Image (cartoon, rainbow, N blue to C red; front, side, top):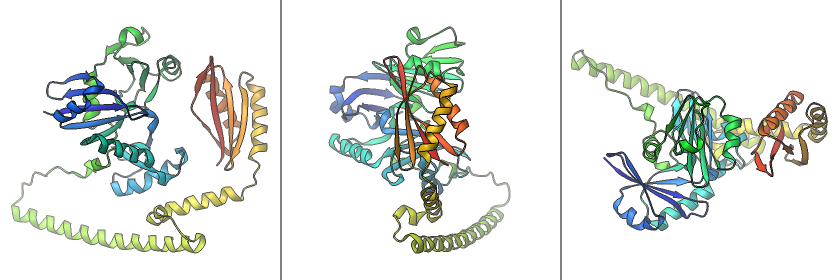
Length: 389
């Protein structure tokens, strides 16, 4: 049995909410923020909940469970999804299967600020989570947790969203169609007969879900390859036979591991030298993974050598799309780093998605990414980014 204290902070590092949870009695109680000091003195395990805007949540599909391989591969695998440089972030993940990982990303600058807050408050933190992970995710379920003016939404097993009470209905209409059931702490306000079941979600259920290994923990001291833990075999042969087999396996494994590591080290050394010969000084990340660095460098050179006609292409695609959909207005264009940002206004999210699909059909040589959709005066504002493949 353990007692937890969940400290929910806002964008200004002010305590937004305190939750005391006893996993023995399965009871959760909300405490006044003023009781932080006294609560810390009696609770042994402290958990931080961060604003959803600080943490980027995504999934990767890498065929590995090795922490070393994932640590080197995940940043480059999601490089195109990030708004800043790969080296400017801290990464945490949870292995979901042999080929899939749940990933959380936070900037190093924000992580340092969090560390300063922990030291200032003299906290002994065991885990750090995004507030968007607070409520459970279940297949075919819409999970909705309302906390005053904020709503957390989880559409099945997809990445969660944190939004305002006013915008939540629009997101539910846009993304909630596949969900057949609902879990919410306010069933009377959010329940609907379009769901087969509408069940009450309690504070204790959310705490229990969050605290026991269901979500990505941003506390780096938590990193561990749980999959490497193997269960003991039930030996039925004589003890001396088992010992011989174990020693034989250990010798072969160590030899193969040593031989493979030597080959990998030699290959990485050649790749590093090749990069230095062509590009000069390398960053620490590039020296750790020269193969990924080489792919990134080649991608940059290819993009640099291509004719800079993305603006002309973009204007042509917009003209063609305008003939098919006249309900979308182009608010502005911005050309940066060989990418074309298209600011648009539309009456609904579905129209924005349809418009993006039309542009993608026209622009086969480009990737079209869609940004955050904002509702303003009954209209949706969004940014589409045209990127060379």
